[in-house]
Image (cartoon, rainbow, N blue to C red; front, side):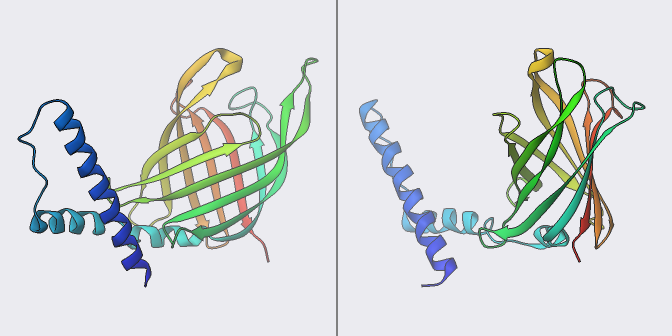
Length: 219
């Protein structure tokens, strides 16, 4: 049994389960006129679903990020124009789930302010996924780390050449008692061995850069 056959069986099982649940709910509500779709309609439904599950050209644009990377992170605690804190780390990126998502495994240090106003390095680990949603026609991703308990989600697009990826999402900021802070994430590809990831705090301004991470491919 190949991957497509397994996926089709899974999809059909989900579809049948949903239909049975809908029928049970409608019977309880007294809606006896709801009927299950026929075989032809079921095939049409399955065909629509199957058309969205295979990786495509948009996924191929992400292939350039696969590999092992050395990272240099700059964090502007005082805002753009202030001296940034700089730390180093590593990132391992690989395809998962049949080439549908790239999984990022990041390890480094994060300069965290302390009570005295100085900063000290803290272990920084993160795990992220990024892929392309064929149904919504947009890039989507998640990020989580040991520096908080948030699960960040974002979505966006790339330029036609696949050299600039722009995403938008929300981030909570406990230190400022702010929830749902609008964030822009931009990845700019310099060449096959280097790209730069930047986070902009849109709550503070369109070009308010707070974090910049440069990725250089390991030799």
